[in-house]
Length: 198
Image (tube, rainbow, N blue to C red):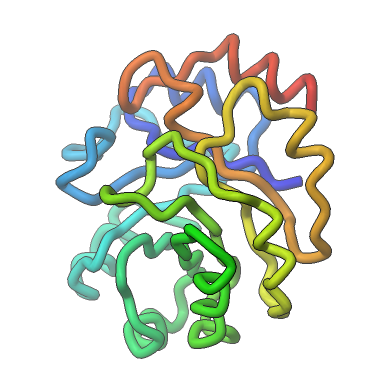
């Protein structure tokens, strides 16, 4: 199972989270986020894959930051089109899909074949990081061929629920706001405990 911890920013916290053995680490490059990476941290993950999170960003800016931060993946968390994804050919993409009900799942079809992973997150007024969960049973409607990460308010008490969730294309989970002491600062003990339970 892929473990992605998103919303990282503080150098020591990055080191601590990395030591827990996750697979991906998310850095948010959306200025309106409380976890926005406004300047390059003194330390960036070397063991975890680096994921840059963008929201309807200019393509040249995405490419520049991907280069500057040596990003392994680009996560698109806005209203990006399939054409937009096609213009980022050559980069590994994760497309977030906001879900409030079963009908939202079909959105994936326009991106099939253009991205490496989908990330199903809770639809909310802001862009992700709400700490709210959606009804995971609606993911039974996902019949695509692209693997996906489960996101949206997964918290310290959800290890059994994650283990019980079954879908042939679910390959991992995305953790963020419910493991935080403050925006951009993760509670290492809570994360460690959760990963041990998993």
